[in-house]
Image (cartoon, rainbow over all chains, first blue to last red; front, side, top):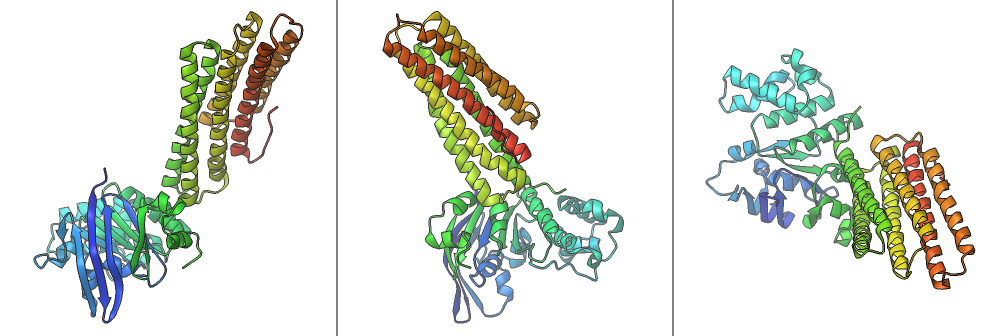
Length: 253
Length: 212
């Protein structure tokens, strides 16, 4: 029996007079990896940003419908978007550590912004999250060095650690390996497979093969519409929709 | 070296499915010596049915793994060969059922041939064990020689049984025909286990070495 962590009901997003997402219904299973795939401009990133209200920081967007996190609509007026963004963390396409901050401070920056300054607690979080992302052994002797000195793959794992430091329940990743080499990509993919034991993961990817490799469930978006959603093995061996079939076969893009 | 966790988990799963298939086949083949008892027939029918289902499950798991994990080299060889090994097991269980049906049509199997069938079954079980051990240990060094020698024993039993039947005039043609079919099916099962061995060698070496 799969529990549903995020339930999207009738989600439509407009940017000025253009509709980006069209009446999307989807149930995201808990502690699984769900991949959202589709060609450029299909609305993948808009969809992801709608799941933690990050969409609201951009001007000109209007959101309709519901996004239920454990049954509670995150767009209800009594919900604080900052709380939602802590519970639903996000990692972006390009590694974006704060270059002027140390590795240590990059991990705890979100906690400090929330007023947490207890050094023992912060030390513990730094160690725990860096261990989770497999970075601790690589950086434990240079925690006060600039994060900018890390390789691209290390920086992306640091960004994941930064998101985990806020103890999220859901992790959103927007093409997290598109700027990385194959080895760094493989490390991130293995990391995500480990992290799904504790977190619900939603990953947007251009890379069909990556979606196939690491996800348990896959959604195919096309021109703002959800064309198909299901178990990844079914999507890649016996999709129900002809458009999905053409997409996974690499015949449309 | 970077581990590909999901792919490796799926390969382990396929290995376990093949081991389950092996157990089904062993049970079905073992039951041949207890024919024509109803219990033996029931076991063989169950094995034939279970192997058919499991063959499809292995096939589905394999194509899902190929589609989602993009395996290459030895991983790819193993996954593709897993489907053909499963199909060979399924065929062996079909033949066991054919043998069971043929034995049902015979009033009485001569003692000499009962012994021949028993020896052939024991030899097939030894061959199956060689393939299982090779798969579990990922070691295929002696597989070719061991299987070839055992298969020769079965071929010898088949030829000896034909010679025996040639000199018998007191057995009906119908009985002779059914006995020949049974012995030919046993000889064929030996060949098929040899094919499993050849596939296991291919997984490890990338070379097709027929076992005959």
